[in-house]
Image (cartoon, rainbow, N blue to C red):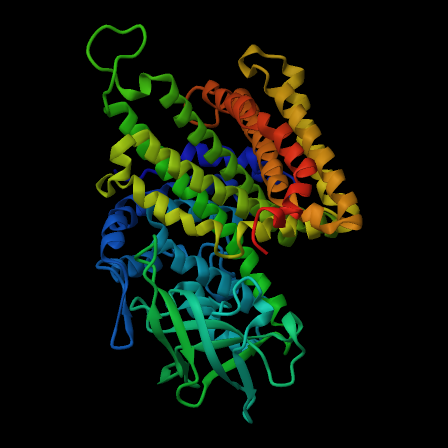
Length: 593
């Protein structure tokens, strides 16, 4: 089955669930014309349907291959990438001074969902290039920007992010790659990196690697890490490509999913050291790398949304066609399986979870936009705090949802979902990595509890709770039968979220392990409550305007389903946060030490 971007649903989520429309009306986006958003997304949807989606299955079957030191991508990949850059898709949110279109991150976020839904293995390459652009534009010197930024923005060259080593995964401070100062102001880098997405490929003439390494006199741990730009081919003074640099793909992984995305082992230093150039300051590379990672974490959350939406579309199409059993109240032959209540429940669960995750990711992008675009410094500061708060939720909640929805998609297909030919299994295999890379979801939960919850005295959390409460109040004030018990269920969820947050803040001071034991259920509680409120906002907007697809009751019913079937889990999640710590922290009575 092919893919069609759900443009109306995406626009409703952008404009109202994420608050783009109100932010534009408040003047935070300058002269950006929100009316062009639909045209951009429609064109992106066409490119995804016509070019990227048809390659998804072939890429999964063929994969990427390493031979004679060179990585080749799946058939059709290089041509699709050339068409991608020619159409300007790599430059959507790139800085205008270097050839980008300068459009908001929120617009590019919606496009990222589309690319991920159509072909996640393809979309991974530009995803990391965009992170490389952000790091270079923010932290690079003028010379490096002049040489590399325009090529990265156009997509003529691609970028990579290289952190992980065999002994240093989530613990980045344990990395051993070393850097030596050269007399000409450059550096020579030695070491091995693993799990490097698109570390080598045949789609562009050059690849620009962003690599973490440690200088000989650097402090221990993350305080002694520097970030270096290492080109695959050294760039000569006139901008032409010179000698091959001393960085090579020495292996390629055989993976559960995303087969067409080359995941490489990269080796530096076999021939005197890879020539690298410092990004930012010595020993402050983690600050630069987090610029890349925060952008990438939102993009990975959008991968979860994209795969979830693709799985939804495919499961719905199958449920309309597949006939099994006789539904209650019918007498003629077998019924389409969508006529059976439990199948409808699964399809509603898939759609509601996907819509909630989409709204959270888009809201994160809007916050990050306002943090850089608003004229008022107080508005920028508040938006930056909200963006920081939402980023771990967007990454972890949305990728968890991607995994759950893809699994439900297989279940709707029944036995045929377990058969590769239907494609349902590929979605499940492809999305599984999203809850692991760019910081595992457990690390996102720790970040939320240990750093974001108490930041600035809890101001960002309090402001978000106030906004969610205002949304719930609007639903309650309507008192419309169509919303069922949506208002009451969301109000209860907000209470659970607030109580759990207060308990965690107390435990962070007195018993940090208790707080960290509850971090993952707290993130789920936060995501579920926030997602429910975002869907309620969309339902209210659809009710009061002509936005959305078709009858506004579909959005009201979706918000109601989420509140009455997902948000109601808040009370149990609250108890998991508060009551579950003791058993977790005494697990040595069950688990070997």
